[in-house]
Image (cartoon, rainbow, N blue to C red; front, side, top):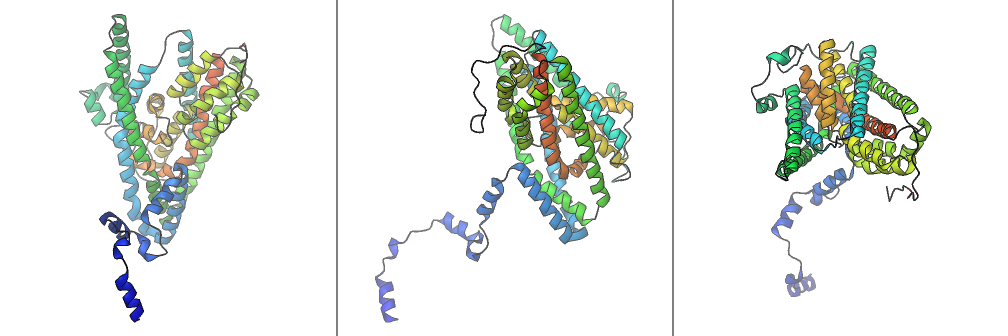
Length: 455
């Protein structure tokens, strides 16, 4: 003991590394001192390692466990879902407003090919919406389950109300979430800006570029904020699933299963429509289309992002399918930015499904409002995962449905988002093949193979 004491006295304590205050606080407020528990930053790194779909699937599993353990007390978690949906709703209206203006500004709609492209895209979107309305009306997966006796909100839109509830200004339309007026204002501003740009270009002025840069920056900023809000979606899903399981709402679970089946059926019908239209209007056969485009379709399903899939889609069309450069540029790059048929189909079915659950009647005039809003909202949807929830808020508002009922769909939306993104890509690639005509162009002299490392 005496030898140990003398050794301790001779030891150079200054040779030991000194902890900073930050390091001491970090060690104090982590689980490191408890031995077996991981540090908080390790848990956070583990969570960030997952993709968004992986986080959502994990949230569903955790929600199931919490619902079983907590029982009816899981209702206390319900406000978590409402908070996340409120955040998304706060960003939805300005995002659609800026996105439509930006889409009209960047769209090169000059020439016969561009006009044909617009007609094809609008036709496909209208067919998708009608398919969705037909399937959801025939099968009625929300019938027999009631989550509320709901009256329409003051923001509900009808054909008669369009003339009598016009807001006094554009800012009032945005602040009051009157989405139809917001869309109409965005279209008018976008067309006016195109006219001003053409006039200034003819005069040799470039003052219009400041507005274009401002619009582009605003869209990027809103998209970044949307991504932050979407990162919170797994927590909302966990709370919603826990509440459903804890309160043993099995009837709702059966209705959601029926809704998933109806959406998959409608998406399949839409895909068959694309193949029929290809057979009649393009040199590309349906079998060749499916084989040559499978890389793009699979990537769209795996990433749930049409924007991330766009480079692969373009190269599939050029190098595997063999369409011309002009058709590929117009159909994939421009068409992929403006057209999302699968999203429009899903949003239409989702809004009618929730209306069935809540007892809100959707008569023919209101279905026309759904069609109009779905077409415009699909144009303004950013090509990122789970972005369909943003534009779905617009349709809910036009029908007067309470936005928190979107939470009912979150448990299954992560899977359906992948399916509808694949249909989105199939939609604008089929349009690309039709733009290429009925006569096959000369093949490329050099075809670089598509690989995972070089998509």
